[in-house]
Image (tube, one colour):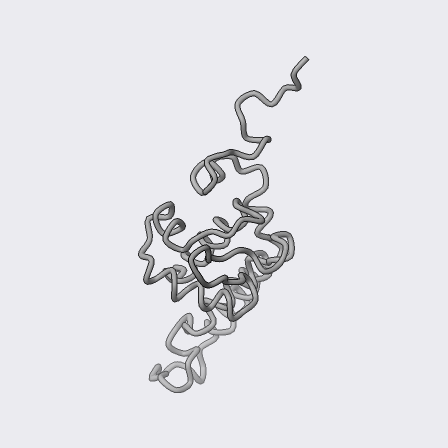
Length: 159
């Protein structure tokens, strides 16, 4: 199994927005930090916006930010949005299926169950699970050049 590039980019965009919670981030900045094409990111941002994951702000100081709290964004929900259009195997698409085994093959039902278990596991993971306390990720995706207090090298209280 392999995730599409769009799903991968959607995850990167959401993590960048979550690391920079409360800040409007520019798509071009995310593209630079994530080693991605701005053009491809814009296509993914449109889908994220259309499905209520991010809100977009137009204009000179525009950009995007999370549309809801990161602990309310299920990774399974995101993956379903981006992976739903691609059938896992030929036999999953009745319009293009030419497999002669379709009527008697049992593999499809096992694959269907495995995919459902895959999404079920991801349904239990939130964007917050990926970001909170992940100092390495914060170091890469932070747009304000300041790390979260929990990620600084010396977090001991001053006397």
